Figure 1: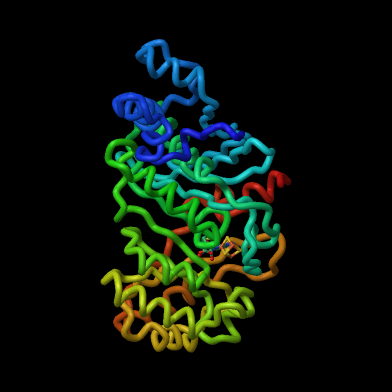
Figure 2: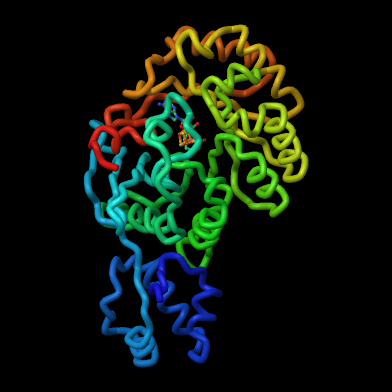
Length: 347
Ligand code: SAH
Ligand code: SF4
């Protein structure tokens, strides 16, 4: 039988696993993992005897990946970790921030099956889903780092690292339930953003289940053909179905959607395309994030120029669509998703 991964259980599940014991012990163990951030469970001596006995008599583990590599940005505020999982797979977690407010960017899969042409993770293909424990462990790792250097707390989470979160829906949702539990890590659900390539059934499910997180949809193309050229899964979930699921999401939840647009020179950075975006998003509460492409080894495209990014934004502004041009912060830490792993030659 596989050991019970303490990073992967919700507190109610842990209480069920520890049935017969006072819930005080489950709570104590949970807080050791999520508040004290203990990296391993070699039986802290200060546990009470019933809890110690339970730990001795049950197969439990605590996922804590090994740090294979760390790269720090020149300004010191961004750190990118290459984490090695138990089976040797590696994933990236990025911790970025300013004093007092840090954001962790998490991976949800080893590789990705969606194959977006400009993405280093997509170029490498899919290996497997991350477990709930492997997703939670990335948060715990960042919390430990922040505690160690005393620079502040983790405030925001973005699921924009390697992999497609809505392709690993159940593990991602359980992980988010765990890290937002007020009795544990207590991260604010409204400070968590899930970025999807446009997995339509997942977007519908998020809405139906009233999940309290922010949604970002990676758009990149505003016509069926333009989008499918960059995002092959657009053939499976065409743009018109994607937009219908976005309308359903905003109508059901009352939330706006963030749309991600990777700006590629000569590909999707024209004024014409900006007008098409405005047309596509009409009636949807939206915010557009414009992100200049980070060049990758497997794709010949280059980043849009600053002037075309501003030109694109000007059109959106005229059409009353709010947008932000995302700074290329942390470019010096091999910023784009999957790029550190690609550079390290790891799988
Ligand atoms: N799979 C999800 C989340 C991970 S990718 C998704 O696709 O949304 C997070 C974001 O990074 C996406 O918007 C993706 O399009 C973008 N991205 C991937 N590779 C990039 C690159 N080389 N340059 C700029 N943005 C990139
Ligand atoms: Fe996967 Fe997102 Fe990369 Fe596309 S951009 S290949 S969905 S990780």
